[in-house]
Length: 313
Image (cartoon, rainbow, N blue to C red; front, side, top):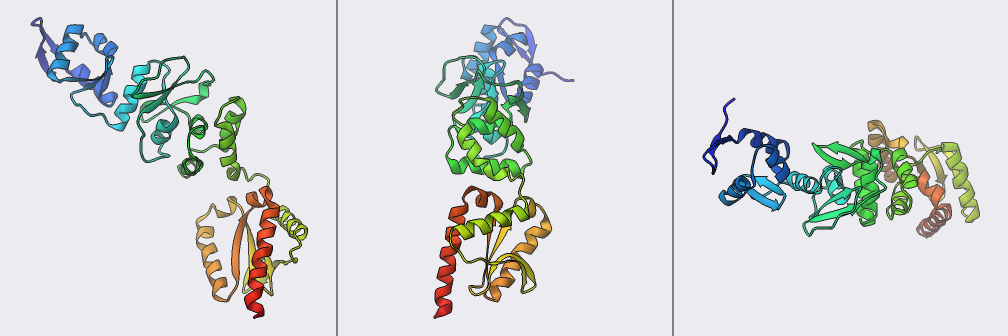
């Protein structure tokens, strides 16, 4: 292998290849300690800083051969600066896992020991970090997806948290059981409550069609809404609940019901064909019915009343 040679201040020759290899593995970033391990002296480091071969990100962390750092380089610089045990975390980890498009500055890292925050670096002291909270992705140490979501939930707006969770589900990174476990084990975390609330729709366990029908009929009866036809075939389709006079139908939905390409294609087509013959169809999830049955029934009753008025006229 050919090595690039440079004459040092003391007249000796040194190679650049080990440094280039190290910088390539670390997104163009190295530490002062790593340079010393490669044989650099303080004088040699100062010389490379003066000539521009090294660019100071911090007095102990340097970019090699360039001024700007990529987003991955910024994350690497942050964890190298904080030392062993530091993990990319919070919004920075959300970005690194692919749950958000943009990396916000400053980069956030979590450590299991106390430290002072720096202007260019968000630092979080997390004594409750568990062994399973630390992992690696894209060659960077990072908090696990459950821990990332828990931390993010403590600072993010609700819509951003929900968007990140949805993206984690799309990328097959979401483990609802692991998320539920961390909210129970990490006591007193500010993200626990908002994360549990945002995860409700991913815990549709125990949903059954018959159980959902009983819950819906009970809610309608309590709200004084006329009883619909149940599981009748209308225009060639079996509808869960149908009010014949108002030509209005309600379907009970669950996440499991839609996890297939055939369902994704067939459901809109059915809704379109029913609309063309004057039948309005809406869908209500089992989770929502379980969470707010009175609201669901009241809204259905109000909509039935609105549909009666033009029909009567």
